Image 1 (cartoon, rainbow, N blue to C red):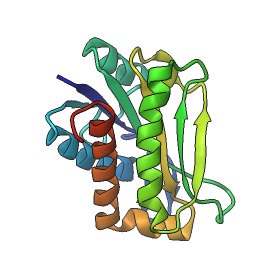
Image 2: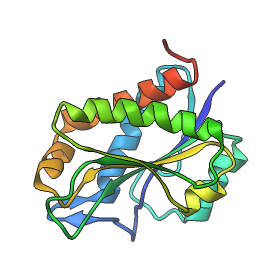
Image 3: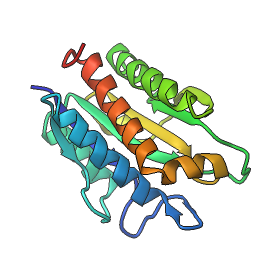
Amino acid sequence: MLRVVIDPGHGGNDPGAVCGDLREADLTLALALETARALGGYGAVVYLTREDDRDVPLAARVALANERAADLYLSIHCNAAQNPHARGFESYVHPAARPCTHAFRSAVHAAAASYLAQYGVPDRGRLRADFYVLRRTACPAVLLECLFITNAADAALLRDPCVRAGLAYTLARAVARATGLAD
C-alpha cells in the first residue's frame, strides 16, 4: 500500500508569505487537505504533517515521513517575491536526489504545470535546493511552490476554490499515476 506524507508548509506562528488577506499557511493547508482527500480515493494511505493552523517544526515533519516509512513526501508551498510581476509554478528536489525522486518530481511537475498553463501561469522550472525537508527525508521528497501570493493574477487563482480543487486533484492524480495506482 502506498504511503504518502503531504506537508502543508508553514502554520501556527509561521504564516509563511503574507500579502493582503492571503496567508501562505492557509493556502497550503487548503491545497494539502484537498490533495489528501483525492489521493485517498486512489487507495493511498495519506499522512498530513498538520491538519490545522499549528506550528510543526521541520524536524517533526521529516520524522513523520521517516517513522511511517513513507513512500513519497510532498511539501506544498506558495511563493512570494519583491517583484509583483513574478509569477508561476516551480518544483524542487535535493541536489543529491536519487533517480526515483526525479521521476516522482517529473510526474507531479508536468501535471501541475499543464493544469496551471490553462490559466496562463508560467512554468518556472524544475529546480534543486538544499531545503531541510528534502535533505532529511528518507523517501523521495518534492517541494512545490504553487504560484506567487504577491502577484495579482496568481493571488486571484489562489483565492478561487475551484482552481485550488483542480490543482489538488491534478497533484493527486499525478502521484497516483506515477506510482501505478491509476492509469
